[in-house]
Image 1 (cartoon, helix red, strand yellow):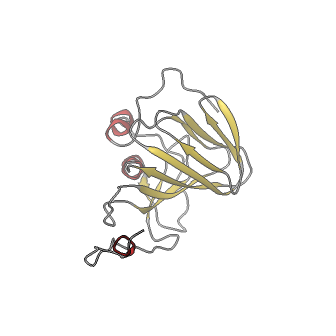
Image 2 (image 1 turned 90 degrees about the vertical axis):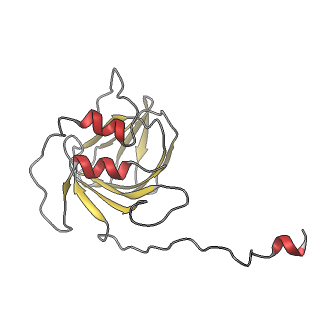
Image 3 (image 1 turned 120 degrees about the vertical axis):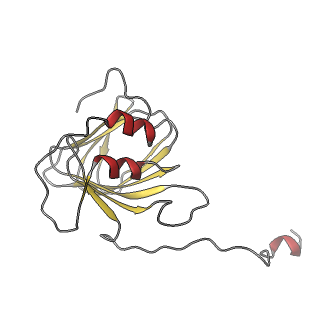
Length: 177
């Protein structure tokens, strides 16, 4: 390799930096059937990004589940931090436990079910972004440490919100937990 190729460009523009601790991102209570809450840690409206993505955490309480869905414009990564449950991906079941990592390409139907007796907590990364806007629009603002509200329904226009954010049209025959 030539010397010229090894040198960093003299005028290279540095990208943005944002450092957050858990609890510093926007957080939203989630409606049934997931219940629980999400925290949006990084999103393009909070930090300049060359490749727009969304990153955060989701907490699903015992008995809750993230209903079956797919993303038609995005790829998603899930990494389990706490709790136990199962992921159902295109009908195949996979255990979810601390350290489980899932890559979900576009149009892969998936759902996450908390089958344990404690919260199922995982990170989510979606590229390109959009999931954070969905959570904001269907959820209710949450302050860390606040008591969970009574379970509440998804908004009446949830299908419109899904189409406008990060979701494929819902399956005609959605699987149930």
